[in-house]
Length: 522
Image (cartoon, rainbow, N blue to C red; front, side):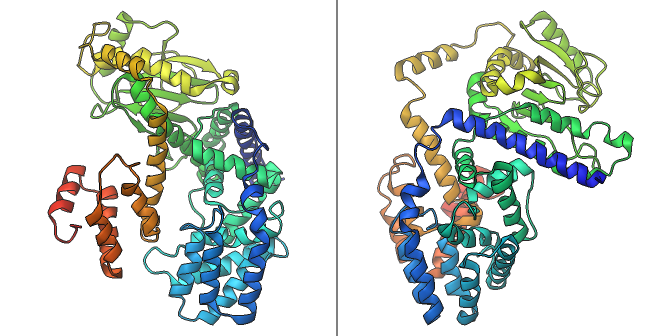
């Protein structure tokens, strides 16, 4: 076996173990097999699709096929009626300059493949057609695997895993892949993962959906093994690019944990904190080989609650100060010495001359953490969320003093007491609060820049018409404006929404412009 083959085999093993860790958490958190969403919703309607394809094959009437399939997928909980599925069929019908050629492409793409090689070929042809008719960012060729594999799975879901958007997101998370130049290769990767690394495509589908919906925070020794994979590579003279995929997984996990816990860590620390995660490379050449997340005090340039993992284990605690400020580390250490916390110790970063060496390689001169250290064998049974929140509460007084706000151990202005009283009186977080957080995720998906231009206006209006957004009251003028808008005006309104939500200007500037600028005003 060559070095390259050996590294690929090692990567597959790491992916498999990381997926198994999520399967274990999934089965612990859910009643796997008690509710089969596909059997309840899709399977009873699977046979209805076959006559639609046969009619298209006989008549080659693309418009009638689009109308019939749109009606079909909306008649039950199909999972296909949104922007990633049926909307692509609608766009093919609307934008294809040669409808007869579009029919040929669709008939080939939606018919069940003979084997994986045939499946890859079908997806590539469909992706090429979507790229050919593309206007702006739509329809995206990235939708080709889902559009095609959904129909294949109607014949045999265990033989042909569906490239659900949630499944591909989870695959990218596990495999550390940011993008694919070839959508056929993208499906082949998902096919191999679902049928071989998992072995049960329907379970893979459910685990991926659970992961995407609940955003669980999972840690496991496999992450330490990923950190170990990079160790010694430079001395051995290995090519840096061989470790990019490994680094992408580590950074992807860091981003996932950082965003998933940002609001809870802020609440535990009693202040606003923002998640920061590492760059893919340490020095512009070498991919990183560790994993850390900082939940930073805004404007402090580095004062943070930190979780830091390497090949030996994990540290959770305080990153007291950024490097590069003369005497900053010494001042922080003096404060820590006078306000020591049980179980915490000063741990050295890779370039630090002080603190206990636990194997951290990254971190410049003066970077230390004041943290609880746990060896790698504790990870599999660890509730990382609880451990991070405990540390956030533990180090909050130190953060306040290091940020120049108050002396550690002094009473605050009474706000904490009021917060405790509020929680006890209201039972916060209430079920309504949890529903608000779930609604926020749903609305963020609808307003995603990639989806906004093609989202169904009826789905868009749900944001302000259902009361889930925050009780804005009757939006009759906005509803009328969207209802009566021609195509050009509707696209202008959508661009306004996009700018308001995602524009690069500060939030206050965006709000003012939308209220005052006639090019944006709705």
